[in-house]
Image (tube, helix red, strand yellow):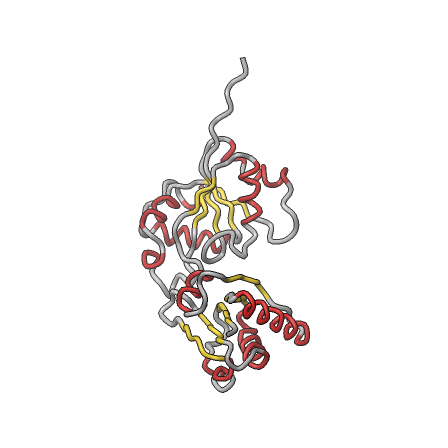
Length: 251
């Protein structure tokens, strides 16, 4: 008689701080239950091994890790390209064998604007339970603090870098925002934040409100919502080279 297959472990989606670890205490942004669950995991799928080890080291200062940090198995998720089922199965083998596995992004909530979504899709296909843990999401925190429409919103990731294409895309999104009364959200590489804000302020209708949220959860967090015409005279207020979320809502 064939032996029964082991009950699969779970894929646990573990959030990480949005701010640099030196800028904020881990216990200020992650609940105790999340810290304790993460501390008990031996197997991880991570976006960046160095970042993951730093976060796990910080967790270990608050909650004892079940195993020594060097004994934990970290599998790095490919950033680009398709994740075929064979590769996904290899990443999730520990879960298929009955052990819980953690999934960790570089910052914030896993799988939102993040390659980890491919692992979650594979976990569902392999009948592995998926459990999201509580922690910060830059998209939701920025939306909460924006004062813009919170019932209808869309996240678009990065806008085009080429100026003409970017301007065209901004105008398209503004039309959609006006038609659906929908907040539009996007991000940019930190060193191009000023370029994007300038493009939004100069392209959008003067009364369209633009919200900028930088360095969320950090002591130096900056959150401000103003009409486009006011931003045009306050572009120098934007903090430089820090992660930011941009949102706008047309009237």
